[in-house]
Image (cartoon, rainbow, N blue to C red):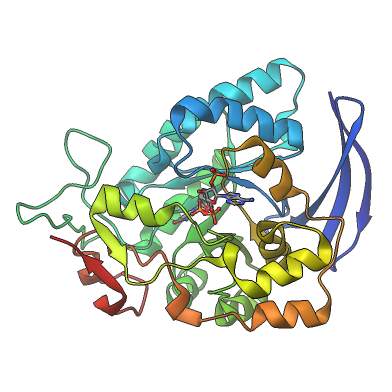
Length: 363
Ligand SMILES: NC(=O)c1ccc[n+]([C@@H]2O[C@H](COP(=O)([O-])OP(=O)(O)OC[C@H]3O[C@@H](n4cnc5c(N)ncnc54)[C@H](OP(=O)(O)O)[C@@H]3O)[C@@H](O)[C@H]2O)c1
């Protein structure tokens, strides 16, 4: 049984509340109010690469540990398993209104005629009537393979790009989904500033959230200022540096970055962790939320799930924040350039200004 004990205002627009779990354990969580008017917990559970055989237990552990915010995507192929865990939780008295569920329009469904089809498929898989946040996963579009939920490929191995899809027309359909009640808020992911501006200029409902890669090596300073101006909350993905992505890129795409970050082992992060008797992951997550970002660390390990949300009982000093801010490498810190989608850089809506120099596709 869960109960909301109290709510207090702490960090400006950020509020904190205490959850009582199983009538005994108290968990503190902070929430922010999106421009849509809905609340979003500042820590959510990421689920990319959470294996389908483990995801039901993972979600149950997370719910029992105080997570109320879950991030998935049509592409992660785990919405059905997440839906099964949520159903169990509802059957035991859990309240839908206490949850914040995000999912995303896939890159191969990134055209106006497919938006409603894909949000309905996600809702069906999740067993929900609405999601809290629906994001356009990527600004570029691929043609869908005729026989599967995957991008089509050309005979030379490159992905078949959809050069006709118009992000503004897709956004209009996203707005329709809000009006139909299928999602409460809408937003973008992996769009750059001028692409977001283009959506804002042509929108009736502004994006209330943008999900981008954000961690100590890539702190998105310019985007932060831009989003503050436009009242868009940033959710940082790969907030602890996505340690498993390296192997995934190699295995699935035969693709690698020339250097892969090891944020969890960084000496500055380790020293600050020792000062607070916290793990390096907790320091990285605290750094992001103290900087006004919501985070969605992924873990399938019960102890790490629990510790990743246990970051509300300490504060980093200004000096420590400064030391962590100094780790920023800007664009050079990027892990997810998406160049593993062979040929994507030729898409007119490819968002990043990166050269192949960082990335090597082995043949
Ligand atoms: N919008 C997008 O395009 C996009 C792209 C990437 C990711 N995302 C979202 O963002 C979420 C998070 O990003 P991510 O999965 O790339 O990276 P991440 O959360 O930075 O890192 C997850 C990895 O770190 C390990 N880990 C978690 N907590 C740990 C801890 N306390 N100590 C040591 N290792 C720990 C996990 O392994 P264990 O599971 O074994 O703990 C997992 O391998 C994703 O799951 C997904 O929901 C979105």
